[in-house]
Amino acid sequence: MEQQRTIKEEVSYSGIGLHTRAKSTIILKPAPPFSGVQLVRVDLPQKPVIKAEISSVTSAPRRTTLRAGNAEVHTVEHLMAALMGLGIDNLTVEVNANEIPEVDGSAAPFVEMLIKAGIQDQKEKKVRKTFTRSISISEDGASIIVIPADELKISFILDYDHPFIKTQFASFSITRAIFEKELSPARTFCMETEIEELMKQGCGKGAHYGNTVVIGENKIKNGELRFANEFVRHKILDLMGDLLLGQPFNAHILATRSGHRLNIALMQKLQKHFAEEDAPDNQTLDIEKIQEILPHRHPFLFVDKIIKIVENKTIVGIKNVTFNESFFSGHFPNKPIMPGVLIVEAMAQTAGVLMLKKWKGSGKLAYLAAIDKVKLRHPVFPGDQLRLEIEVKRIRQEAGKVAAIARVDNRIVAEAELLFSLSHA
Image (cartoon, rainbow, N blue to C red):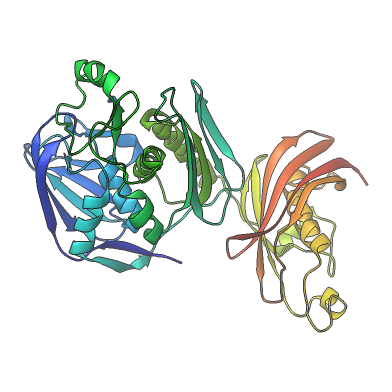
């Protein structure tokens, strides 16, 4: 597992805000484990603290703004993206005005500051969430889809009705090295034709050619691009900054024409999803309780315990794959591998626990009626522990359909959609 991270020493920077033109100084300080990222308005009475989390987001055009009471801090996304890209979880940000100072419109200067301060691991582990199903959100032609994956990957389609930008696409697995080299230098941008309207909205008061790429009708007005597709890379950077406001997770994020508003709406939806996943009505079942529900017995019982149940929604089971499993003697004598059909059976039995639990003692059985979209991605060996994640798609009195995923060490080894018939024996 990953360790939580903070910085070793304090580091500071002074400048002006991109939108408010406020002169400000930020001081970045180490913070203890589980404290998260906190912004402290040291210029206000009582020095109010604003937590960098989704509940602190307030509405503001063309930027991400955090608020607590009457205290707010604008344009946090580039600093937040730097923290996410470097894997920093805990940090205190002291700021003496209402906006983070902008350097060159990218996250690269913040990355340099943080590296200068030194990044250190902390003793406590980082909790990184995973998904068992896809989650999506859309608005006015823009969309974001979150797909289960074993890493954090972001793919983005930028589509502007502008002859110089047109359509751009980029896709990156988010690692520290990739972020530093490929994403952090990408700068914020705007069209020359929208400057007047943005100024009327109170945006860009501190913008200049040094911190904003200005796009004319068919060329850049100030210098050269750092990447041929710098615009879409900056959109990924902004999305990363908004992702830091939620809990760390692994997924493949596919975004199309998304901006801060939709990014924040996604994080709100994910926060609700994680809250439901962690709901206190989750239940656990040991092998004895499982046998009260399922008719299966050794050697054909392939779920050892249930670690989570949300009634009529999800269930997570565990199967410890030992060398003593009877099927290993023939599959294969010199290279024992768990048969794929038995992985599917283990997923089906876990789903059966969820479907039959409410009818325990009624004599009903869950018969596997159809299997669809089966993918056996990786072999399973003796000593592996299967995590069997089931999400209900549909459940009725006489039938049910589920999406099933089997993992080993958070890597997907198998997945399928299973259809059941529920009837009396």
